Length: 135
Image (cartoon, rainbow, N blue to C red; front, top):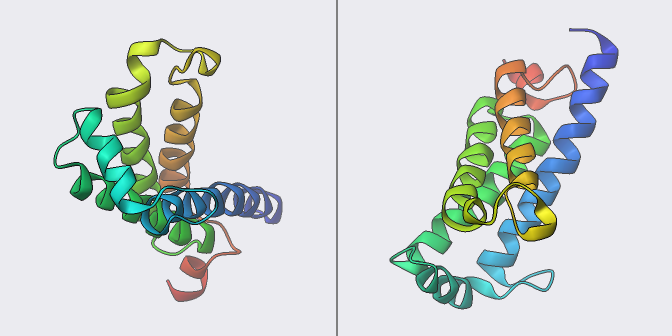
């Protein structure tokens, strides 16, 4: 894999991974203006994702853990799939009925994140990753 491709993958992994980890920490811990697990669970319940607390816990763990793994380039296929599955659920349960465009609450942005997760899972993390060091 070329140096430039690895730099590109590093940039993608860092921005997406850290953003996902931060988003997951909003659900799990109430950090960065998040509501924490109980309130997020109540919100999930109101959207029909039951049991809400358990679903919020699973989403938060997938986002937080998947985001950290993605940023580090560790177990990258697993991290990419965690990100993709989280976005697929967001598309199906929340944004899909609103159409494509994010400006109308649609799934546009979620689809992009889904594709990034799958794409990097297939491509690999690049030279600047823990996967490259360990494996």
